[in-house]
Length: 248
Image 1 (cartoon, helix red, strand yellow):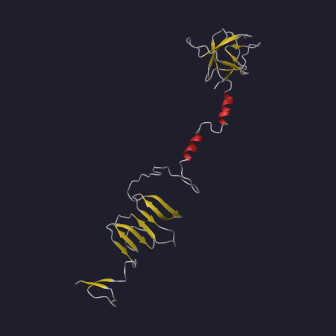
Image 2 (image 1 turned 30 degrees about the vertical axis):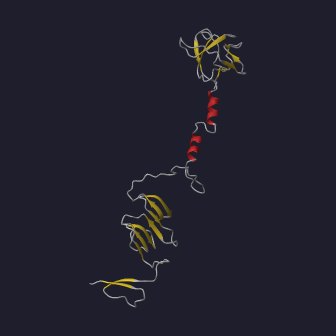
């Protein structure tokens, strides 16, 4: 990027006492130090290459473009080297401010949005052979990783110990609690809110594999036999009933 220099009322070829030098020739340098390098890769305002500066008949230095990337130049018209600053700073600042993405933050934000979850109506494409989402949890079983809410009511939720409680909204099917092993149960179904407790459950699978059902269990390989235990036989016994008697 070449910066524009000269062409203003304060860029003139002058002597040490301030006298103008009409039609003078000047050189351009990389700094004011003794070991500075002379710069000859210059371009005039019309785009023509040049190696030195030429003041006009009034001693003013016409506009020119310095070498690529040079933000400061030192010019010498015979009275020593003096720094010259770019004259297009304001123009470049306006272009920068009015640019679509002057600092690249918009592009960066868009790159993050590509990895973000859409709030509604979006489709997520899980990456192949990679975990799409990993959640680090404390494992205290108190908080939830995900929970569905409606107003102040909380329904289905995934606890941070891995247990899943499926609580449909009122009027929906029976709620389930999966992986609720804190009290020895693995699956519980409740007619109300799901819970790991077997109290009030209509169906329970214990961690040892035993199954408890509040209602009858129906299967193609199960007949209508009834099993009783106690000190007295069952009332109205039926064919197929089993009575296990034990003493008081």
